[in-house]
Length: 143
Image (cartoon, rainbow, N blue to C red; front, side):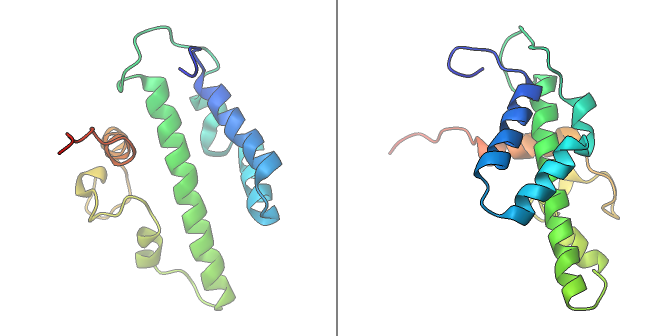
């Protein structure tokens, strides 16, 4: 919902793509993002619907959740790629610990975000709640 209009998750993602295409000054960053997006990176072509849900606007909207998770996955994949590039410049392999450290949120920040002790599978519903609370915390009362 934006300025009185309902907007689909696909439209939001496409707007982000176009913003990056026309306003990112880092050529490498822009190219990497556009290549990822245009190749349906993180399956956004199937995950983000073009249709607009006409139900109530609330935090439980599956399309809103999917868009948030897609953006979060893109963010984490960029962090992991940057970690790999830094290690490559140092002529070494990335350690598993470094890879895990590149992910947001960290296990310390959100221990329930992981489904297993080996930290190989995320709990998407818990991650979404974490992201929602992290970026849109409840308003605290004024003193």
